[in-house]
Length: 395
Image (cartoon, rainbow, N blue to C red; front, side, top):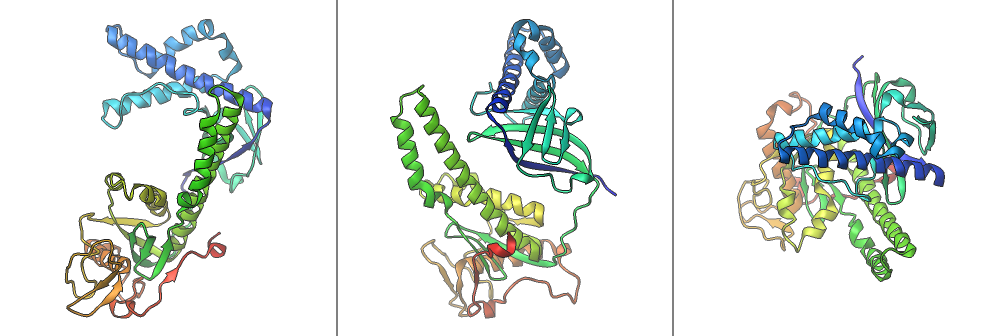
């Protein structure tokens, strides 16, 4: 049976003593990264040496106990993983996949990684080096099928601690048994409209929770910098924003799972989301909809195939192919040639499906199998659209 690599993330149940120790380990990880980065830049500027992972690690090990005696409190795997991250940053720079590595900051880079060979997981208990034992809020699914733990990452966000376990398992993931093919049109008014009539409403989580967020931001602004009350207010604001992100992510997971359970192939437009965010009138609504996250989640639950982003899916009649201009204010497509009257988003989804079928004929079901998830353009004008997601069914 094939070995699969998977990851699991959950919250940690920590007390003040354990939380302080985890915070110190995060600080040592930042210290190792920043110290090696400054040494790397200084030697390169002075022409002394051109470092790699092994040379910079050897230098750090030779000076760490003299310069940082408190590093003995931490596992040796923590600074070693930070140096590996630094090496990966320079590798991405040299291969033009990223920018020059920057110094890590407290509050933004509060995490550390440990090799899985020194980590033991028993149920909800995680045993780390230095006799550090922590309880997880959830058990790893199919824990007994784990063959190897590659590494674990502990992170701090919104005054909460999380652990991410990267492991290998011999349990194969069941293939998607769905055979449907569907076209999906993403939008602001409605998050997604499928060619089979399914409509995923836009939750607008940020819009609904923005008033409370602004109130918490004003409280933070009124607190004196450096005071304990300001730190409490910042933590309260961070938790509120974290809950907002969790609500949005939960909605997207349920929506994409509903689509993936019925369809083996999804056709979508290759949207330039970064370019769309430059429209300041729609930027907040677009970012609140999380188009990239919707596509990312759908891509690992089923097959996603993109069509050309410049294809005018909203301007072409899905029945006869006539094209006409369609400003955003017009929400219904009315064809003067064939008389089709259809919601513009559903018409665009049908066009995306047609183009996807033409571009990827090898993904179509076998002849005789009627698994094409589309409501005909003739029946689309009268067929009711299924609105929303059944959360009880998908939870």
